Image: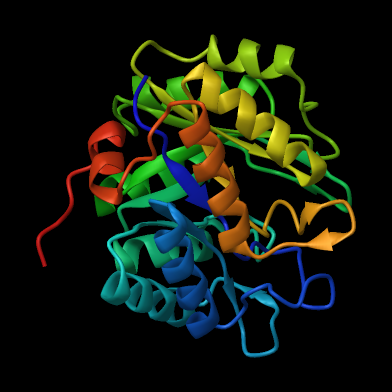
Length: 274
């Protein structure tokens, strides 16, 4: 198997410090969490931005500050979120990608039901975001909440808006989308093209069992407080604790953890020269 890529998603749009005081919100906090997660074994960081009040934002200045702090202090792959919880305007969702030109960005390739809203992503919006990523030289991570989103990702490739090898993130266990079961993960992993790579993000209590499955199935793992606030029932986690656990379990199972440089090779990224 390839070495294991551990993605850390330290913040997200939904969690708050009231839910878990370890949640990083400000750029400096997010960068500190990224540094600790890198030391723990992460090679990729998935970032969301918050304003001074801790509210989700698409402000390019905040994203730029986070990106700068992380890339100055680590060799992590930085993946910017273009998700719609912080605002649904496609131009605003693409603005940070156009400005920063990060190595990666998330791209949800369809619509779904969140518990509090319908997350609408018509194909013209998906195409717009994919085109912005292509123009910036940014590799999309296809965020998959249901199987039809795989077909949409393949359609982007057919239209020249994404190129192989595609990378997918299967988000499982979120209310309104696919259940986190071995059968679901097997089905999704067998539904993507040969040569594509995949990560699984288990939500809440499903984070650990989905991660274990990914380790032995040859996929990759996303952990972090965006998706899961607890280390175990009743015990709040830190981002680095969640990373350390996956790195330790991978070692026990004989699957080494990838460095950022190795992760770039696995994902087909070419790091830009400064």
